[in-house]
Amino acid sequence: MPIKEGDYVLIVGDSVRSVVRIVKGSRISTIRGIINTDDVIGREYGTVIKTNLGYNMALLRPLITDILLEKANRITQVIYPKDAAQIIINTGIGPGSRVAEAGVGSGFMTAMLAYYVKPNGKIYGYDKREDSISVARKNLEMLGLIDWVELRLRDVTNDGFLERDLDAVVLDMGDPWNAIPKATEALRSDGVLVVYVPTVNQVLKVLNAMNKINYVDIRMFDVMVREWKTEPTEVRPQTWINAHTGYLIIGRRTIMPVTQPAK
Ligand SMILES: C[S@@+](CC[C@H](N)C(=O)[O-])C[C@H]1O[C@@H](n2cnc3c(N)ncnc32)[C@H](O)[C@@H]1O
Image (cartoon, rainbow, N blue to C red):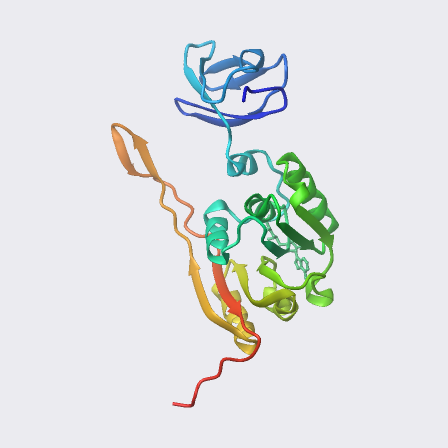
């Protein structure tokens, strides 16, 4: 499909990697020169064009994470793709899944969840702050994912979730342990609970809350991704890495306690 006005394009070449939205009659400035958008419109993704300084740039279809990281607004800490990938794979969600999330924050996790449950699933995104709901809505609209999300202004700790029989609930909020009883009511009988917290102090409170209710198969981990330089003459780890984001605690709900005989 040829590139048209309003499309997002990922421009890649010689130290340039950037997402731009194509506006007719304008110029894209890079550190390797300028590209006229009129030379981009009508080209196929995958085309390589030259800047005015003679550098070759590839025109690519951006991934959802490219647009999120470069173009979405943030008013909170967000869940990054490395952690979102583990959440998605470990909840087993896919097209058709129904998932609740609190808090929505800037809508980063919401967007990644919505991308994987479409075309027939739904994400129910809760936040108690109106400004979070509003920023998340704009980000989801920009990404074309709003049709798969219901945003709800609601305090889940006090007022709970409106849905029942959900495949998964994701909690990323300051005190998620207090919301676990309400999240459990919203899950299907063997649904998956995911809690994301930045400190071990919080992990202990989450584990304590999960152990009080009927959760089994509880796992906890953090995710380290070590990016490497891939220059043909220099293949080695990048100098700077993000050493810590948060911990993931994942467990499965059961309908009754799984007690074992005393040892
Ligand atoms: C760190 S942000 C979530 C970021 C989000 N996961 C993302 O990737 O963009 C935490 C959010 O939780 C919301 N929050 C905290 N307590 C809440 C509660 N009891 N009910 C609903 N939302 C809550 C806050 O308002 C805040 O927007």
